[in-house]
Amino acid sequence: MDISSGDISGMVFKRVIRDDLGEFSFDGPMLSVLVELDGKKTVADMARSTGLSIGVLRQVIQKFLQLKIIDSVAAAVPKLDRGFFDYLTSELSLAIGPIAGVVIEDAVADLGHDINDFPSNQAAELVDFISQEIQKEERRTTFKKNMVNKLREMRY
Image (cartoon, rainbow, N blue to C red; front, side, top):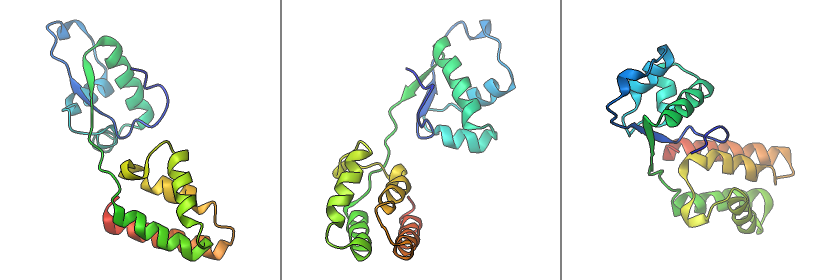
């Protein structure tokens, strides 16, 4: 598994039981990360609790993967619900008119997802991406403000 690039903040890892763990030497950051690896915490959670940057965590996790002392866990990321997309369409329609639905579908596809299976941890990225299609600055600002409030309300 190569984690040298891309967003790893939502990834989850667990320790692998090995008989030869005593044969490895770990520095402070490595020990901090090893303690945090429980198969439930995301890399972002570990960054908050350890105070380490995502960059440092990436290096430590890459080393652990090479040593085969951790393994990735398929984390279930919540999906955006239909209500969010209805609100998004409504707000975007106010800003750009009836083509809002097409713009949203295209944006979702451009981000590599399906509208029925869009991860909630990318909702802000979707809103930002879509806002670039709004030509008038005042409408773009209003759209972003309303969507940020919705994201907070829905805890995305």
